[in-house]
Image (cartoon, one colour):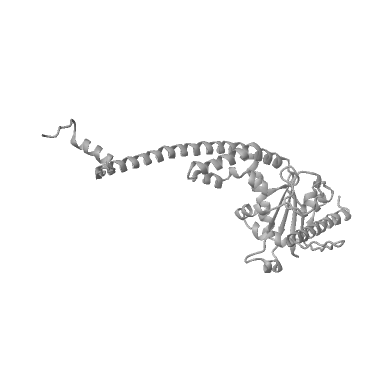
Length: 324
């Protein structure tokens, strides 16, 4: 007897029988070509759509930044350029000491102001100042010289206090207004993916909500600019691990420092002195500190306070001279 012919295509029944026996038909080259083309098209489409969305999000963020920059820039940029110009000028040459009579009688210690401390070598030009300013800290010199109600600074704690305490560390000004810089704009424009862009969006929101308003307020109210420039010393450089000594190392060693004070309202330099100050400490009682980090911090503190006292003496000399 002839086998009963099944309706439909024989290949369909053969494929079904192969599957039941655990066999699978091998895909043809045409199938893989079709599948590969579809996958490529899918990836290209996804990249196109996500790229357009990323570009749109970047454009929206940068548009917000330009709006903020246009509204805040006229207040912030002139002050920034002025402070940077004074810093570079002070570092460019060593001049004779000068204490104006106004400094001796002006109660600038009770007024809001700005503070910056750098190595002289890090103040040679504006780009270097902007990079090095991020290492500037409110140190023991501020706590001893200004005698502000800041026990943490007087105890030698670096950068004790932030925005609300005076004087305002100029480092914080750069941090608060970073979203207004060309570098930030470039980084946003080059963000490779939405995750990275989200970081910049969060930076923008934080700056707008809290940092920039406070920075502009303090910039408007600042009455003086106090600048300390530390000169390198061979002794400190010898202890450095290659290259010049850091600011923290310099503060522990005998070295010259230049102290400048400007009245921002008049633009006049009231104090310009160059001093080398060093002090020592002794432990009272039986329990002497042996931790190297604590000892280094204590040495920085006493040296900074000694420098502050040297500047105080210069101010006192101007007062004793009977300046009007």
